[in-house]
Picture 1 (cartoon, rainbow, N blue to C red):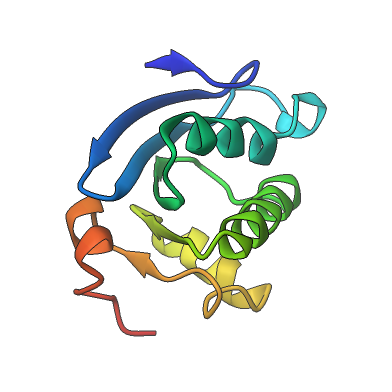
Picture 2: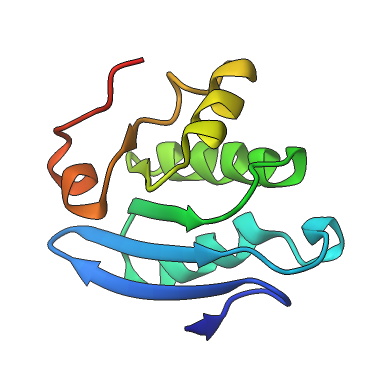
Amino acid sequence: MLALAPGWEMEVDRGPGWLLVKLKSPERDASDTPPLADELWSLLQRHFIYRLVLELDDVRLLHSYLLGQLVLLDKRIREHDGMMRLCGLSSFNRRVLRLHGLDLRFPTYGDPEEAVMGCGRKPR
């Protein structure tokens, strides 16, 4: 695991045309950490790639700070004709996305391979 922003850790893999990032949330409140969207955007730019799969099975809760960072990052990626897909969400976090009206904006998949292929979406 590499440090991404203080408290956040990540594993980064590169697939054909995709950057695969597994996030692990910090033990403490993340709202006072540097903007996660900025850190991930910088990572995408360094790799010259704008298609991202975020693996979030180690993220306990999609709280408002994290949701805001995901929306900001997704906006930047779309402006570069890219796409972001999420995978590994718990059933609770999938409900959080749905409650905030973000389940259509963020396609969710069971694992990174399904996300890259764009198949195997879980029914709503």
